[in-house]
Amino acid sequence: MQLNSRNRTLDLARPVVMGILNVTPDSFSDGGAYVETARALDHALGMVEQGAAIVDVGGESTRPGADPVDEREEMARVLPLIEALRAHSDVFISIDTIKPRVMREACAAGADMINDVMALRAPGALEAACDTQAAVCLMHMQGQPRTMQKAPVYDDVVADVRSFLGARVAACRDAGIDDSRICLDPGFGFGKTLEHNLALMRNLHAFVGDGYPVLVGVSRKSMFVKLHGHDDMSSRIHASVTSAFWAATQGAGIIRSHDVAHTVEALTLAAALADN
Ligand SMILES: Nc1nc2[nH]c(SCCc3ccc(S(N)(=O)=O)cc3)nc2c(=O)[nH]1
Image (cartoon, rainbow, N blue to C red; front, side, top):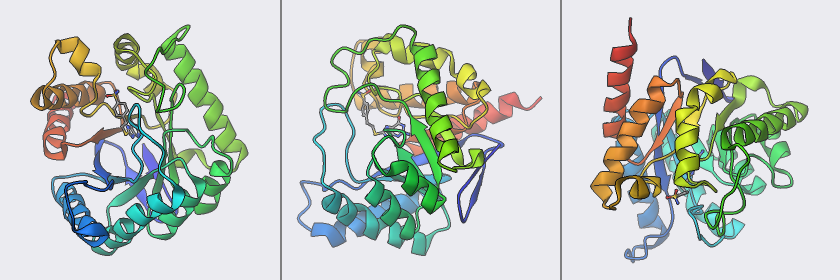
């Protein structure tokens, strides 16, 4: 299994880790944009050192309740970082954005993949993905980040999400995006209750069976709080790494994580146990 972009091919014979790099202004730092870029670059190179095969750069939070960020501000955050990272590393770079202009500029700056939580539904997004020849991640979200966790409802969450992703794949094909550039993502926590998230985790093999690399993003998400009945960072990290191990055993291709070293170790163990 591989994932292609115009300039690079990602080998997915074994599951890989996508390291998360949020380039949102740290309200505690007074160093301004330059310090932000330097710090973000250090963090990105550290994740590559720890074994991340992809660095996912995001300039607009899509967590529940998040306020939108305008295009100029988002590009001001992510473009310097992508240019700097490209100059220092050959790592696969993805841009976590829903805006076509940001997709185009990020790919021009060196990004290889468009990670779109809206699955290229914004006007112009399909054209941007086609023109840039980037790899694309199509993710399912019910509603919008601001309101998606209020009262998510499905007839059958697994069937509904698979059907949505199938329709988005068809739209990509119609737009001239080659299958070898597409990966799919159930969108954990994007308009899902704990029960919905668990049903999707339990049925990851069905998504894998649809024939595209599957990306899983549960890192540090609140789904684990209700399951464990308490909330602290170490418990969220343990649950995230354990989920990464499970997802790898089910055939997931890409694990999106804040905690790269721990997740690489979990995937290494999963691979060792799978070798028969
Ligand atoms: N492909 C892909 N891209 C992603 N980008 C993000 S940002 C996380 C936004 C968030 C935070 C927290 C919760 S919650 N309420 O479940 O704790 C939901 C969403 N995530 C993903 C993901 O999964 N895939």
